[in-house]
Length: 228
Image (cartoon, rainbow, N blue to C red; front, side, top):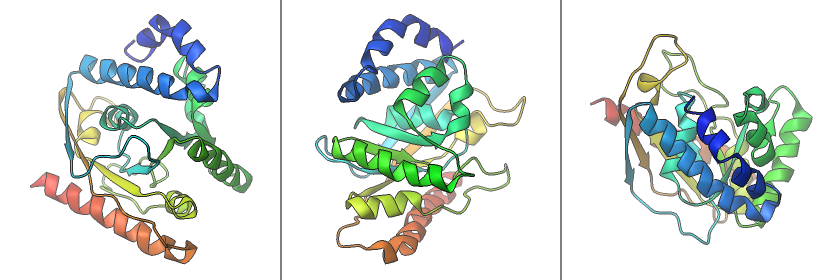
């Protein structure tokens, strides 16, 4: 109900906002309202700490640990710069949500090399239009006992190719609040932290793995700190 009802209420204006790619920033503002309704409606109180604030006129690569469906909503409320999600195509099957998801996000079939290559081309067009990109580099939600899975290289290679900063975010409580395990979770706080940006200036494709490791270390260290 919390996902679908706001979409139904705002459907006409949402539909208009996706008619042109140049209108995406307006759609993004509506999506942030939708995300806040869901989080508050589920009883979540989010608190966002920012070590550095993205500039309005620049493009970035936003990344975060992936632990829950609520990661999408918390990312939307944490970041004000219009960005486009790169996400798995299966989410497009969700009623109502999927209709807008497949028309505004960059969908990827991770079993297809051709699909993964197409992501780079679509992301390039969005970056050239002044937008940012958001990727969960674990490639999916890890098993319950894994705090942070290994990162895939796609987000970092894309950021290096376009010389845009990596912005790591750590989500501390999403798995505890609302996981994929039935009858788990509940209302409470959701903590997010936007870390200092990782520069890609003068980096080449050979620097992809070190940049990947650096970003993962930042998020893993913060996850450990949140537990204390």
